[in-house]
Length: 352
Ligand code: FES
Image 1 (tube, rainbow, N blue to C red):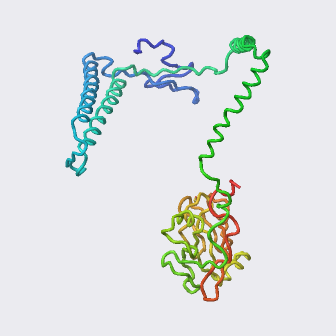
Image 2: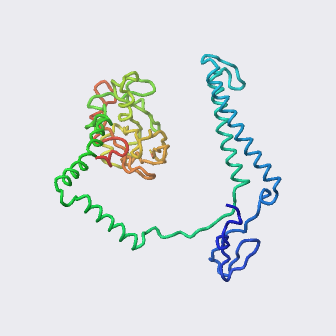
Image 3: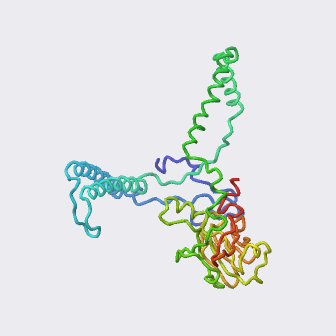
C-alpha cells in the first residue's frame, strides 16, 4: 500500500484545539493524543533511480541465496564425510560440515536480509492507526449463533436419540483418561524419599574436604565446615541424589551466643549442624559471616541467622534451615543423633 492509498482520515489526527509543531501535535491540553509524526518520504519514495537500486539489491540478495542453496546441495553430494580441513581460526574441522553450515547460513541470511531491505526501502512505511473494535459479538450475531445451534441440535436428533447422546457423553468423558494414564510414564512416585536423608543415629560427620570423620576440636569458632554422612562415597551411583539431601554445614558458635533453646540443646559445645540446602529453590548455601552468624545463599540472597535457629532474616526463602541434632561418640567423633526432623530443601512445603 503506498501513501496515496491511505485514506486521509487514517493519517492521523490533528485533534481539535491542538496546534502542530514540527509534525507533532502540541496540544493545549497536555493529555491530548499527539497523534503520529508526519510521514517523511524516503529517498526511494521520491527518486525512481534509488527505488530501482533497492530493487536490484533485494534481487541480488535473493539470487545469492539461490546460489548458496545450490552450493549446499553440491557440497552434500560431492564432499566426503571424513574429509578434514584446516580453517583459521577454527582449526581442523570437517569439510562437509563446514561447507553445509556456510552455504545454508548464507542462503538463509540472504533471504532474511533481502526481505528486510525490501520492507525498509520499498514497501510503504506510512504508519496507520486504527481504532480497536469491541470484541464482543453484536446481539444479532449472538442470536444467529444460538438459532444455528438449536437447529443443529434438532437436526442431529440428539434430544430424541438418548442412547447415542449418553454413549457419546460417556466416550468424551473417558477419552481424557488415556492422557492421565500416560502420566505414569513420568516415573515412579517419590513416596517418602523426600522426607528422609542418609543421616541416622550414630552416623559420623565426615569432613567433605578431608573425607575424615570430624572431631569437635577440628571445628574452630568462626569457620564454616561442610560435612556428609559416613558411608556415602563419591563413586556411589546415587551419590548426587543423596548429597543433595544430606549436605550439611557445621559452624561453631560461642554457646552463650545461641539464642534459640532447641538449637542449643541440639548442638554440641557450640557446634551446630544445619542443612546446607537453601529452603528457597535449593541452592547450596556457602557464605558465612562470622561476626553476625548469618549465612547467605548466593542464588537469591536469602539470609539465615545461625545463632537463632537459622530463621530467615532476609530474602525469598520461606522457612528456616533444618537443624541436625549432633553429639559426640565414645571415640570423640561428632555423630548424628538421628535424621533431620523435617524435610530439607525447597518447595517441599508446598508439595506436602
Ligand atoms: S535458592 Fe537460596 S535464595 Fe533462592
